Length: 128
Image (cartoon, rainbow, N blue to C red; front, side):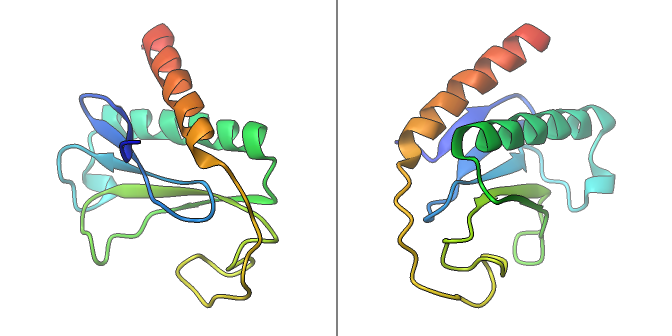
């Protein structure tokens, strides 16, 4: 499966391979800060964040959804969306933090990413 789940003229959604559902939304054009991003692109980012979060909750019933925007190593506007579980290797720490345990999570992520691809296409076509 390709790491790219969805693209628009302004954004792309990529998979971050990991033990938990983890997606990243990148702007196509490079903006250093969210405040540099045009208003229409900001709205599109928020729409995708909302759809992805709701789909992760509905599909996986996680203990928490984490949404983060870091750009120290990659100074390009992007957001991370992660479905977190008490059983994952890092919970309650961030996935960039200290590993807390070996995880026994067995999540089949490819069907979710395929489902999400279809949902994003349908949602963006029907709602513009």
